Image (tube, rainbow, N blue to C red):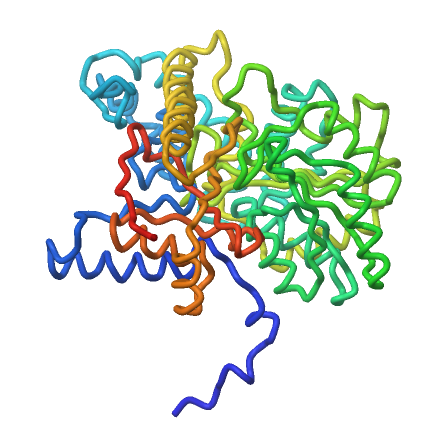
Length: 500
């Protein structure tokens, strides 16, 4: 018998929980194996994974220009071949297949002779050549600088400047394997013991609670107001900060997720200014999760980075420390498996920057394909480029479809008895409140399961739909919620569950 037991492993690992890949997903994977081994063994034919933002697994196609550049960078010898231009200018176009009144139902490619033109192929070849010239040895299989390839960081900094209209320094950028490792790096830097606290929104993306637990810190919750569309009140921040201080917690940072995950709200610019002032006054590092910056679906809201907000208020490097997280996994690109992202680190002393670099160097570097994608995301084809027409058509089609799905699913949820869902302004999820009858709550108690997890399990067993219990995001367990990833839902169907 193996000698290692649960009692012997790191207690921080035991305390760590990550609901989006938790118990419900494990059950779904078992059901999927059952369906493969015994077709027809359940009242559904497939498992619909709505627990996590993973667009390409649900049919979203990658952006053609991005993939062409990646392919050329990974196999640069084909750049010298005469047939390359012809290969990349095949008559292949991005389009949709419309099935009903809700609009496009799925992504398809049709040979209609339009999108990837000869000239846009030349754009991809030029960009690949530019990128390869920035990589030592032109080798995407080699290690890079621990912060990422300098030329790619230059490109990303230029993209940030274009977005914010304020300067960006490539030396502030650390390229990472998605945003998650960047979050872990900052938690390693900020947390020394359980007396160190990180303020996080509730509901929150469980990456933060998991990372805080793994590094031995204390999560200091602040509660978003469901009644005001999951609003963030400064009075709530002050209340929770003072409570934490009274417990002897040294609060080091404030996490803000904008647009919100799982709640889907987009912060107003005035609210962001209040948050910046709060962090400045209290000496907190502002950890800005901005990975859904492209996913804003309402006309009266726009995304503004917290760095842009702080600079527009006249604050500089010496006034406030801000870490901004970005990822290639979300937005319209949905390149989750490529694991690309970055953090922009501003307002830190040189000696602190050295420590951040040391932590980054322990991991050697992030993967090169992810680094390339991050540069493409932040500096895509522009108006006037030959590839812009096809690129913008693909981007707009994806974002408009996401917005339509958000509204469709929001309306469907609100039409159901006992379900209430706030308006989705951005991101990729809906976070409805489910009102369960007392009999269902008692059944959950008898099963020694949280009511929301009990509901999600019944939903999965009856329909094959995988959602995440709200308690996995920090919501009180007697107020059931569930997170739904909307990428699959062009026209949602529901099976009513008898819980009474």
